Image 1 (cartoon, rainbow, N blue to C red):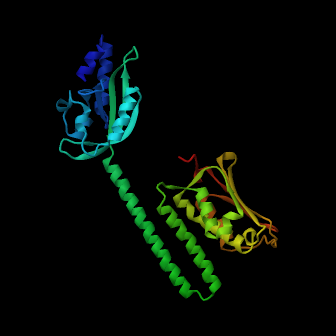
Image 2 (cartoon, helix red, strand yellow; image 1 turned 180 degrees about the vertical axis):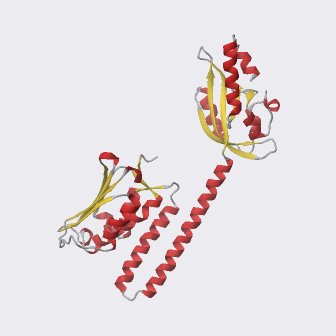
Length: 340
């Protein structure tokens, strides 16, 4: 820090006090802070300041680090592509953000989140580079362990569903009951299979809808329109919705729009007032008796489970030309965005 201070040429006591406050602040933070000279080609840039957090992270003291290039921390697993990206940013005097593996004094590797930004003088010229680094090794290891545990949980859940399915098929006396129960277990199994391959904690509403329509047969999507903005739902709120879609699709393939060649199904969603999401299931082109009092597993799911799990408002109508279902989801039950 003395070298940096001398270059700044502080002229008065007030500036010196400000510098002392700045130094005390930087030395108190938990992230490693490194200040280097501005030249990029070897032997530069040279380290002119490191804070105590840098020493705790790397094992190298300030005395051992000053005058060195930051390259002395690199090793076999350091990503050269990431370093090339860093160089391009610095040549263009842009701020860099990334991750890279460095090596401690004892030879141990560690992963850092890394930000490097130019420091400019009053004339706008870059005089130094400021780097802030955070060791995220433990966090990344924990995230990896969590992914392994989740994958194992999904595997065991699928196995449990398979056992339950086998027992039910041997126990339920009525073949119709067995078929219904088996189909519902299969829907839950699809949820588990889907979630086990999802890298984030959210799943696409479009994927959920299309997946259930594909599961009922080739005609499911062939007679259906599925459209809406990109929306994702939290994984812990997916099962109730998948079971609802399964019940609607099963009803449509047996009695509704998907049971006849002229039948049509439209599943759409859009944003409404108060940041709510409106999901509609509308069947048409088929004659069926209206039965507003009809109840069953699917309607119970709509009126109870969805209200509990998604805080959703739901309406279900058995019209003469097919089922109409409308679900209003509050903003906290989904997230909107764009595909990457």
